[in-house]
Image (cartoon, rainbow, N blue to C red; front, side, top):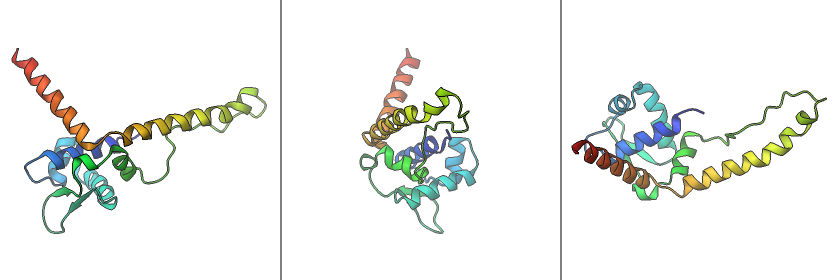
Length: 146
């Protein structure tokens, strides 16, 4: 599985919470990747209507509040095609009884798992991620102070 979704979440949190202008260079520095990869991800987020940037101006902003953006919306922005997460191998020995039945047995299990993941992402917002990050940050700092 690729990391586009986690990078997109990283970008979204940075755009939402930073008081400084966030452009592909500053975001790439935070993600520890190159600016062209950040531009590919932000292009997908722009196309989905989640963020905006103005031509000729530096920086990006959210088009909705973080409480209005669910994680499924972000996931679908960076994975716009209907891609199955879990796939059954299909190049099997047709003589084998397991091979003859594995796909028909596993497909409903895999479909159910994907639907549960999507429901979980739909139930959480960007704001939830931000709150959790702040809580983790505060806990980390209070533990260091002890």
